[in-house]
Image (cartoon, rainbow, N blue to C red; front, top):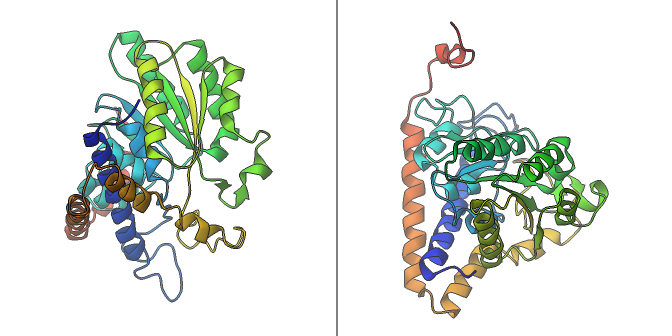
Length: 330
């Protein structure tokens, strides 16, 4: 399954949009946090996990999804949210803790919720697997269209919640796809030191479902495999497990010294940055010119500028909001 020219350009634009957004967030996050780093200071308090380098996974999968399809994402969610169509202004405002944010500024960057496109994420490892199954089950019981995709990291594949969800999804033939982003590091622990198998796709056999491993952080290969898995789910044939080799170009979180990485690893990863690689590929294949891609990149930068300005200009939520929308009352 090959992407069309329009799909290729859509994937490239959303990869660039995610990267430009995170580059801005990275700079703003450090405001007020130097010279002494205090996570609570600055316009963006709390932890910050960047997804730069992992953009191909999000676009390769989400290119096949519609607003009625559901996505549950991880604590590193920006690329997935953008590829799913989450409103960027409301998303930026949420990250800034502003009243105009997706959840009125209550959740921050690890808790982005946009029901208009059926997107949710959470900071708890493997937490999204169960809700993805629940969403898929609801679609199946009601005879409604739509599939669910649960993104998780390779470290999350060792959690009980992942295996419980895999078992139920296989048992009930749910229209759900589990997509593992294998960036080789669970915080500072290497995959080989934490996981008993070299690749998590082999675990699919234990549940009687298809498993696929995609090497090279290749957006076209991801598009191909994800497209087949999503079509299979839509046809009522049940779940699929996909693991993708991808690269985390930043630390686990902002402020991570990354001393656990072997010497030269970061430099080698930047040499395989998927965005310039895809740009070169689009031009070489005749799908776009330099000017076409320059226009796409300029449009992405403008969109990010508008979202960031909207977030900065928005008002903080009133303190009284801390006690609203927390518990249901009768």
